[in-house]
Length: 109
Image (cartoon, rainbow, N blue to C red; front, side, top):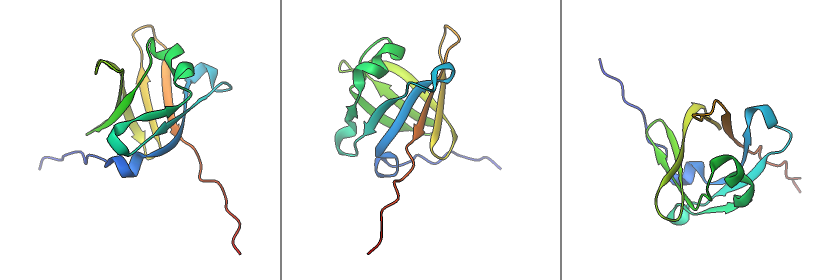
């Protein structure tokens, strides 16, 4: 029996994420995946340091998510490792990680 991957909706992935190189986890960049039109916000210049270009938008793929620049050129495809964690291996050997920020605890009244 064949299996298929489920495409995550933008609503499921929207929100704040930490983007960093595996060997440099002390200096993460905050990226905010916005549901509306797949826009990106946050520290795009920081992420661009590792991507070699500035990411402008994102979209889900069956096995992960893609970050693209403002010319619709793919900068990186991040493969889903588990819920809340995506990884990409760059040609130069570096590993990039995109990890969902933990939900902040909100006090209940």
